[in-house]
Each structure stands twice: as C-alpha cells, then as structure tokens.
Amino acid sequence: MSIYIYAKTRSATSVYCDRCNQPASFIQVTYHHKHDKKNHSVLCRPCMVREGLELCDCCKMSQPFEAENGEGIKVDLMPAYAPGELDSDGTCSDHP
Ligand SMILES: [Zn+2]
Ligand SMILES: [Zn+2]
Image 1 (tube, rainbow, N blue to C red):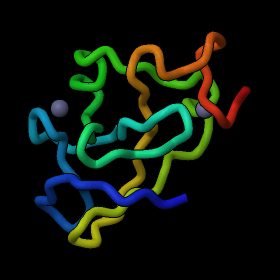
Image 2 (cartoon, helix red, strand yellow):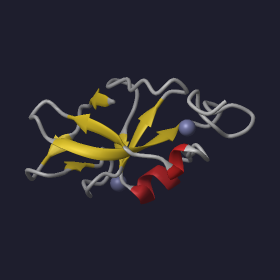
Image 3 (spheres, rainbow, N blue to C red):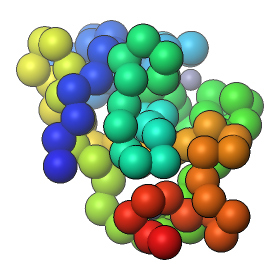
C-alpha cells in the first residue's frame, strides 16, 4: 500500500522528521492504517519514542509502508500508533 504524506524533503531519497529534521523512519497512522496529514507526524525513532507512540507487535515484523510526499519522494516508513490506538492485544486492525 502507498500512503500520501506531508514531510519535508532534503534529498532525493529521504523525508525528514517533523520534530528534529533527522531522516524519518516512522509514520503515525490510525488503527486502520490511515494517515491524517494534519494530525499525524512523520518521525525518526528517538522522536517516536519520546512522543510515546506504540508499535504493533505484528507490523514490527512485516513490511514497511511505502509513503510518498508532495515532491514525489518515496520512502519506506514503519507504522506507529498513538497510545490507545492499538487494541488490547497491542496489534492493529491487520492483526486481530
Ligand atoms: Zn526526530
Ligand atoms: Zn499490525
């Protein structure tokens, strides 16, 4: 699947963390893998951890999402979830 993101670009191959301008490797999505450009962030690992986002136990092992920003830069980002977004087993809608 491919998700459209809003993220800053500084090279042809990477997008940057919304917080610290390091290369991003995580994308915040909902339980159903929807990315809301207004309310969700694209983050590097330290910022993802600092903001308390959680990872799906199953998505961690699976393929990253292909994301593309307005400048046509395609990157692979791992999904991250706000606290409370995952179900009681700590997994997303793909892994009930
Ligand atoms: Zn960061
Ligand atoms: Zn999952």
